[in-house]
Length: 108
Image 1 (cartoon, rainbow, N blue to C red):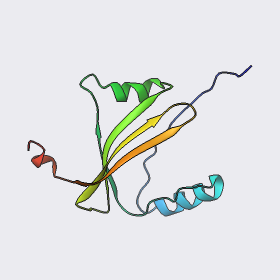
Image 2 (cartoon, rainbow, N blue to C red):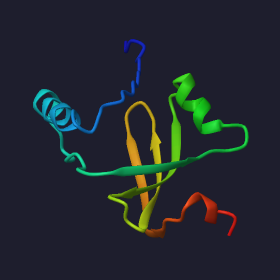
Image 3 (cartoon, helix red, strand yellow):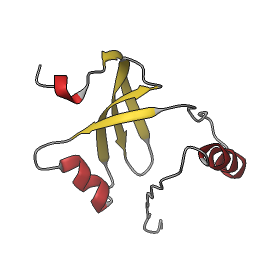
């Protein structure tokens, strides 16, 4: 019989000065198959009017999805990403070369 699975996600703020040391520690302690990105990462998250995605995350739902526009190092192009998770699998769908616009231009 399989016991109940628990899933917890915690997010921490780390200063830019301390980030290299944290990344080095995590790599040594946990190992990784995907290298940490170095530089600036900026994300815009999207959700339904009822905040379905936020609710899934806060409630610890077994299945959840994130919809985001993400860019790296102040690039004018971004990736549209859909990230889905269940207890056993993480999937990402990426659409590259999406134009990044300042918030003021979003009414277009």
